[in-house]
Length: 189
Image (spheres, rainbow, N blue to C red):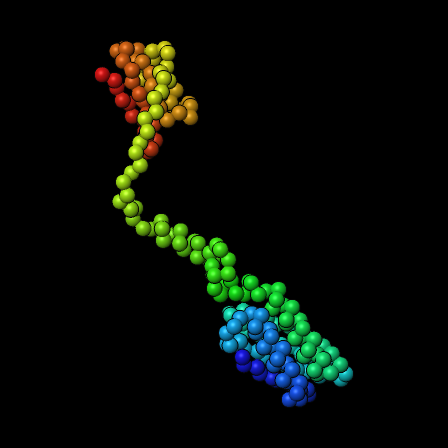
C-alpha cells in the first residue's frame, strides 16, 4: 500500500504515522488482499481546528472521507473511522464490480447480457428435432361454408386454422394462418 502525506501547517510524528498505517492496513484487509491500494492523506490546520482528508483508491473506486479535530492526529483518526465504516458498507459493491460473478451465484448484468448476445449470434446446433405430436380435433364447422366465409371466420378469431365443409364440393377443407400472415387453403380429396 502506498501512502502519501501532504500538509499545510500540520504534520504527524513517526509514532502517529505507524498507527495510521496499521489502521489503513486493516481497511486494506477489509477491501482486498491485494497490495495495490493508493492512499493520499491531506492535513491542514486553521487556528484551533485541524482537518484531515483521506482519499483511498481501491479496485477502480475512490473512497474520500474528511475528519476534523483539535489535534492533527485526532482529525486523521476521525477520518480513518469514517473510512473504515465506508469500506465495510461499500465492500461488496467495490469487489463485485471488479470481479463480476465471483462473489455471487449469478453473473453481473453486463456479463449476463454479453452471454445472451453470444448465444443468440451462434448458429443453431444440428440437434435432431423433438418428435411431433398428433392432436386430433373434431372442430369441423357444422354448416357448409365458402372459402370467403371461412377466411372471415379466421380473421375475426384468435384461431390459427379453420376446418370447414365446402358448400360446393362437400369436402372438408382447412384454412391455415401462416407465420408470414398469409392464409393457406388445404383442400381435402
